[in-house]
Length: 498
Ligand SMILES: Nc1ncnc2c1ncn2[C@@H]1O[C@H](COP(=O)(O)OP(=O)(O)OP(=O)(O)O)[C@@H](O)[C@H]1O
Ligand SMILES: [Mg+2]
Image (cartoon, rainbow, N blue to C red):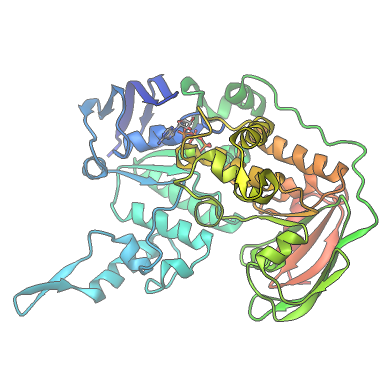
């Protein structure tokens, strides 16, 4: 069934931005084509055009050499093109099965009336998941699932169309290592059947494992395509950024000795228990662990987003046993959550408004903010994080995924906290922007501000932190110093029960 997907001079303009500038690419079936480029390069826009979700300003799309017009997602499905989007498109209030078969629930006739055939709904959804070798209860509400499981439902939804083209926009950003392996196995099976696979990722270390070719876009332009077997990490980074990405871990990075946050016997039923650690002034403290080990829940409790039922937090000379976000914020705690779409950004508000949201009290006088003061704060943050966008007044929803993530981080830098809790801050961020976020953590460290840094990318923790705590099944099981062990060793420590 080998198939071919092609664009000819595709151009997409948004007010103030050219998202794609005369891009001509071709993806053939039977191979995995990685599509890479820095944040805002135009990757998701290209995928959305193939998916019929966005209309190009000009240019043509061809399937098997024949021009096609994809006016809507329905047109794309009719061509056998399925998409796994970067931002989840699931309905939280519905079950896994309903989400997988959304809009296509099997019906049956009862007394002449057409009703939903629930046994068939569940059976069909289960068959899709079985094909992916995933065990997930199809009756569960999607809103109750973690990010990784939601990602799997998203993929199952695309698979249920039996597509001849499947596009993945950063499918592994919420997945742990073994889940990623399962996904790669699945992708390989699809490719072997002749399906066209387009795969977007910022995890460059995945490329040798999964990609046959790499196609690079930069600032809306097509830069080139290389066979993966011939590409080196240097040439790829050079194509993506036009320059070499600097890694500069400061030699003088010292953590203080003065405790700023002490966690004593903290517990939350069913989530984590007896958690004890001290965060020192200026320290970047990592938390490593597998998915579901309780890292996010711990961070949420430290910010007061969720209550805890045992233990105390000592901060700023106070012992806190009952938390609320406003109390923790007053005590100098800032929190960048993992799910930017639901928890961190107000999609309809502008980038400026989102950046100022957390710090309104600091930039306002008697409750009024002056535009000028806001603008100077915002311009500084945008420059510091190099957010790519035409102007800060546009809704934050018009930013690329990675640029939205930078806004989530930027929003809190302005609050002058004592401690910042970072939950997967680099998700969906390109390697250059990652270095900028690391640089920010190190700058904060020099200013005496401490970071608690949760990341599923173990390399990242080893690169950035002073110390790393290991969390397993809701408890801390030890502590390691970067420089004393390899990534593989850290992975093993996170996985195994000693
Ligand atoms: N709906 C929109 N309105 C205005 N501009 C948009 C819209 N969607 C995307 N853009 C702009 O188009 C450009 C390309 O965005 P796109 O989402 O394709 O980037 P990307 O390569 O997927 O980046 P990332 O790696 O951060 O996800 C960006 O500058 C973005 O701000
Ligand atoms: Mg994107």
